[in-house]
Image 1: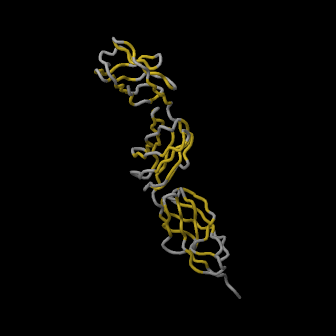
Image 2 (image 1 turned 45 degrees about the horizontal axis):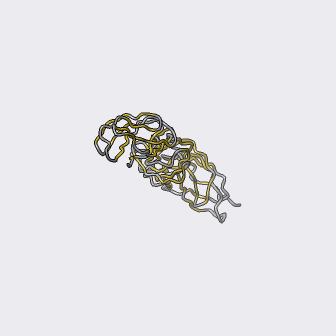
Length: 250
């Protein structure tokens, strides 16, 4: 006498079908000590709505002919998310995030707003998911659906690719140390700034500007250097290079 599904939320409300023989006219279906509501009944099946419960419970069907042998049903607690490995990523998606929590082993879907990803189960306390593409840049809710229900509580921000519109001043000495203000768009998740491939210390001011300090050139010589900004969504390079200019000599 199979039962399908054989697990469901501890809150109850799961539709479960029990199949077998001589089940017509079922008068009661017990999940442990609790009665389930019978919603459909034929000689070969009984469909019920589960009561609330916890752990593993025996399920029996009672008819005029007696009570069946028990089947096991497993109650699953609602999922809980304790952390996301990252809270932002590219609008195009494709990056993998890790979700930590509890009761995650029966996860069937991870929702990023209206978009859904199929999770990979690592353990009951951890799953991973490849982030689907977003509809638009911005923040969406993240929820996990398991046999125990759906749990929300975290958000994820889709970030569009950056642009670098300009920077000032346009030049500085090869020894570095020039404070440069860089303007553009989608700069709030900046991960690095480079001058000619050399990393520069930086501070994000807002989504449209950041401050960087030009690093010294690799060989101490003057010359042009591309300014490249890399964010969670990709990289952008200024249309014109920063000019390292040699100081005067007498």
